[in-house]
Image (cartoon, rainbow, N blue to C red; front, side):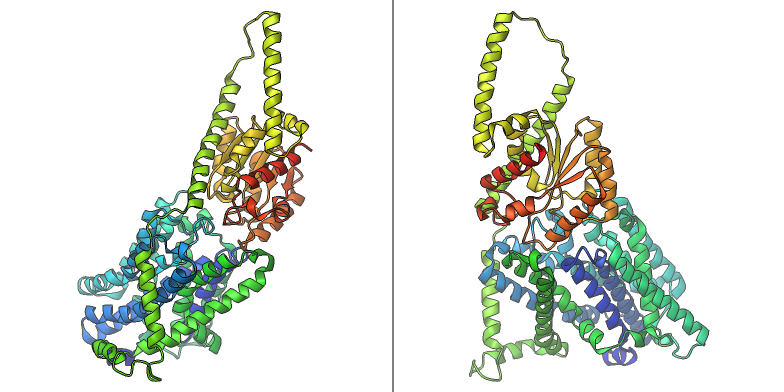
Length: 638
C-alpha cells in the first residue's frame, strides 16, 4: 500500500520554493527584526503547507484503500521528525554542556516537553515569552512550533476518518473544516489582550491551528492528483495572477506587519493564512506556472533542508551572540556569519541524519546497533561511531546535571535589586499623590521655634546633600538643583535598576519602570499616569532595550506627552543586534520632534568601565548606577 501511495503522489517541486520563502522569513525575523518585521508569518505558511500535504495524502490513501492505516501514518511522521530532532538535541546539549553550562537550566523540561510534543504548553505554563528575546534567551524557544504540528498529527487523522465516514462528500467537509479553522481564529481574537504580551495566543494550539486546518480544508476541494495539466489560457492567467498576488502580499507582509499589531491577532493572521493557502493551491496546480517559476536549484536545496534550518537557527544565534559581545558594531558581518553557521549545521543534519534515515529499516534497528559494537569497534566502516558515542555520553551527562529553576549569585542580586527598586518606584508614586493632596494651611508657631527648627533642618539637609553629592560624583550645586526638579521617569528594566539612584538624587521624581517594557505596550501605562496627575513635565524615558519600534508606534507614543519636554535615554547593549538600529531611530525621531532630547547613554557607557555592567552588558551595577544617574543629572540640569 505504501508503494502504491507514493507512486500516485507527485512531488511538487515548487513547494520547496514556498518552504524557502517561509524559512527565510523566520530566520531574518530573528536576525534582522528591524527589516523583516513580519518574518514570523513564515510559520503560518509552514502550517498551511503541512495541513494541505498531510490531508492530500490521507485523501489519496482513503481513495486507494478505503481506509487509513493510523499506525503507518504515525510511524511516517515519527520517522520524518524524530531522527533530526534527536540529533539536534544531542549536538546542542553537548555544546551547552562543554561551553555554556548556564543554558542547562530547565533543560529537562525543554527536552521532555519537546520529545513529548507539548513544548508550546510547557512554555506557556512556565510564563516564557516568544517576544522578550533579550531577557531570558534560550536556544530552544522556537521548538514550540513542532509541538503544534505534532498535536495536529495526533488528532487530525482521527477527525479525517470521522468526516469521511459521517459526511463523505468533499464540499461539506471543506465547509466544516473551514468553520473549525474560523472558530480557532475567533478564539485567538477573544484571547488576545491589546498591549499585553501575545505569547499565549501565539503558542496555543487552540489559537494557532487555523493555519493548518485551512490548508487541510483546501485539500478536499483542490486534490493534487485530480488537477488537470491542460487548462484554458484564461484559466491559467487567472491562476497565475492569484498566485503572484498571493506571493506579493505575503512578501509585503513579511516586511511590514509587526507582530505587535492588534490587527494580526484580530483576524490578520487568519486572512494571511488564507493568502498562504491560495499560493499553495496555485503552486500545486499542474496547469499553472508557479510550480515551474518556484523551481530552481537554490530553492530545492533550501526547501529540502528547511526543517534542519529551522531547528538550528536559534541555537546558532544564541551560542554565537553570547560569545560575541560587540555584535551591534559589525551587524552585517555577524549576520552573514550566523547564516553560514546555520546552513552548515542544517547541511550536516541533512547529510548525516535525514538522508541516511530516510530509507532506514527500523525493523532491523537492534541488529544495526549490535553491528556497531561488533569488533573491530573502530574501523573505516564505522566512522561515526566514536563521535556519536561522545555526543550521546556528553549530552546525557548534561541532561542529568541540568538544574531546574536555578538562579546564579549574580541573577539573585539582580532579582533582589529589581524587587527593591519596584518598591522604591511605587513609593515615589505614593509620595507624589500624598503631597498633591496636602493643603497649604499650616499651624502658626512661635518665631523662635520656627527659626530653630529651620536652622536644624537646613543643617541636616546640607549634610545629606553633601553625602548624595559624594555618593554620585556630583557637585553640591548639581545636587541642590536636582533636589528641586520634579519629573516623571518611565522605562524598562535598565531604568528600574536605577530607581534607587534616581530617588536619591531626584527626591521629587516619580519613577515608573518595569522589566520587558517596549514602546508598543506602554501607551496605556502613560495614560494611566496622566489620569493620576503623575505625568510631570519634563518626562524621562528609558525604552528600547527590548526591541525596535515603527515610526507609527513612536508617533502614537510621543503624542501622549503633548507639549512636555521629553528626555530619552538611549540604549547601551553591545551584545544585542538592535542597539544601533534603535539608537539611530531615536536620533531620527529627535530631528522630527522639537520637544525630544536624546541622552546619549550609549556613548557615555562605551567610554566607561566594564564593571559598570552585570554579565549581560546591559543592566548597571552599583558603579554603573553612579554613572547613569550622573549623566541624567547633567542632562536635566542644563
